Amino acid sequence: MDIYQFKDLMNKGKSFPVYVFYGDEELFIHEALSAVKANSLKGVDSSMALVEFEGNEVSVGVIFDELRTRPFFVSGNKLIVVEEADDFVENKAQALEKYLQSPSTHASLVIVCKKWDKRLKLANLVDKVGVAVECKKLKDHLLPNWVTDRAKQYKKSITAKAVQQLVEDVGGNLAILDKHLEKLSIYLSGKETIEEGDVDAIVGVDRDRTVFELIEAVAQRKVVSAIKIINQLLIHGEESVKIIGLLAWQIRRLWLAKQILKQGGDEQKVASELKINPYFSKNFFEQVRLYTEDDLAKKHEILLETDVKSKTSPLNTQLLLELLVYKLCF
Image (cartoon, rainbow, N blue to C red):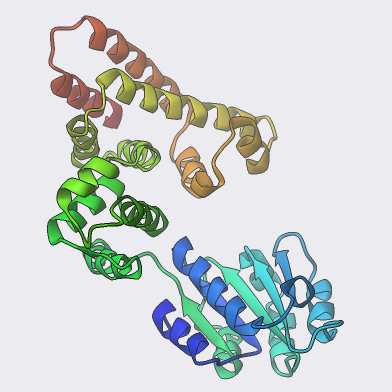
């Protein structure tokens, strides 16, 4: 089942003893959670009927106790949400299978995880008594239709060129695309249609998205992709010194992260010390794993050399940055 089918079920007031939301698209996960909460807790004090856990911080016994205990001072069902539940599902599969053979009649369990193996007995039991909703990232060719439909939620239409510009500037992160559509709808309150010029003027290139994608393209030696991102930055008026600075800043953070982990720290400590935005945490640690410390040291040296050249060399900016990308990729 996909997110649209699920939201339709929730709008019809359907309820189930168990829900599984799985995949890598955070916006769809958020929408699925919002839909089940709105449906299950309608007219109910959520502080009394909603209990939320992190899968790696709670025992299965505590969760089952909550499922079996009726909500106090509340008429209606409880909703027990377990997020980041991949390890929980893997380690407690048998206990969950046993529970689903006779689930609570006054509480629903929501499991949120990245992966979900449909071949397992647990998945079959969920299909029998509840619903599993796949929340996967959209493929690139599906993004234009999503943007067009999403704009309608803000009571706007959007031209094909504006859609193309928005996707090129922002990338495929639906949550960020949605925020920009919301921003466009606010700024263009007196205008019915979003046009290419509006996107160029109001959105520009999303800097956080760009630096992460640029580093990832370099790590995977995708020269063409990296050059395309560089050119997008230049088209939107970004200075070469700023681009080099963004790259150097990210390389230094990855390097520091490697050192903290090497000294026995965990990802939580890295995130705290380097002030990693939670929204980009997953991407950051994926990039940490892509590099060795030697790789990062060499790339940092290349960036320092290019920074000097950007201030002293007669080479034009675009050529200088393209040469930088080639050096970083190989």
